[in-house]
Amino acid sequence: MTAPALASILPGEMTELRLRPLFLFELAVKPAYVIGNTPGVDRRVGEITGGRFEGERLRGKILSGGSDWQAVRADGAWMLDVRCVMETDDGALIGMTYRGIRHGPKEVLDRIAKGEVVNPSLYYMRATPYFETASEKYNFLNLMAAVAYGHRLATGPIYSVFEIL
Image 1 (cartoon, rainbow, N blue to C red):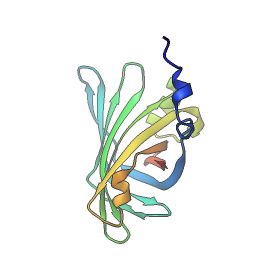
Image 2: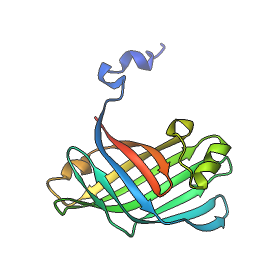
Image 3: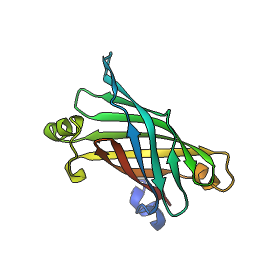
Image 4: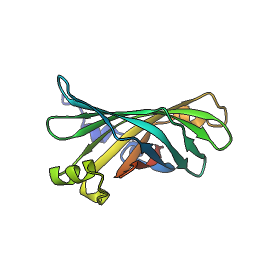
């Protein structure tokens, strides 16, 4: 007996991804420390010096002291591993981590590496942020998965973050 096709047993609610805007954020990052070609990747570390976030349900600033660990792979893709602390305008602290990827044509990535701003449609920059907080008001962040669409500015990245419903 042949098993039914997976699509035939999938509930209709699971056939498309539903999103809700959560917030926009930008990071200010110092020029990266270039550790160099380690076994496996070209490693760079950017120190986060601040930033801000704005959304319907929360807003505030990103505190200094976070870091952006970047791994440039042999295929030219940049793997992102970021940790930072957000402080809401009412004083709650939220830890945010995200992993992401940036890739595109070499000439576009070279322009970004030089600090040029290029149209975000010319390259791919996406991330998956996760949050942790002790704040009851912002506990909803502890209970969600999110995705982010990024763009690299000369001073650091800017992202549009969406809650996955």
